[in-house]
Length: 243
Image (cartoon, rainbow, N blue to C red; front, side, top):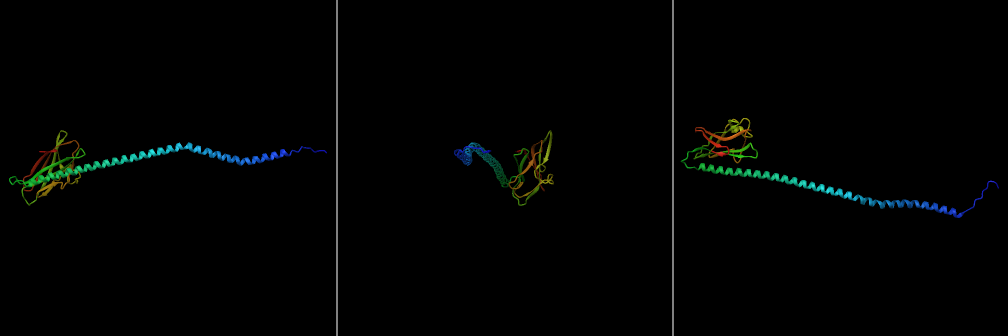
């Protein structure tokens, strides 16, 4: 019969093909599973490899924090030192003023209780001058007292001048013009006083402050006290030394 072809039949070969296809289908999930296991196996190694970088960063952060803490400690120590120095300076200043007041009070009481044979009346006891931590600035205090007994207050005016050199010339400055923190209307005015036994200028434990002009070299301080009805009293003090 025309058009017909006879092919031998092999049932075993067909079965093998089916088995092979089935194996391929089953191998696909296994391949995905095996790939997942491989990624899990490789991932810890990558993490382990990254650990040193993390540890190094943490060490750097710890060192930075330690340095920051040291800086804070040093800054605090410096502030404490500055405060201690300032407190010491103020304490020394206070002690100096207290010693000065006690000395002047003692001198005043001696003057008040002086023998009657001494001339009674006004005394210019001291012109206290103290250097400060600024080269051209000085603190000063004037002490007046009275010798003898009397209930009527002594009233008058006090004029103080500082004599020195400005270059080659002799120059005299009024103390009021050199005194710091004095109202503008005051530089040419005298210092008024009124007391029975003694008076400090400025009062209490305070000191006034003066500024020496640039280029001026002080030599002496002249203090003139005038009481109405009495002869003016003049006393001269060397700069930092009493004459």
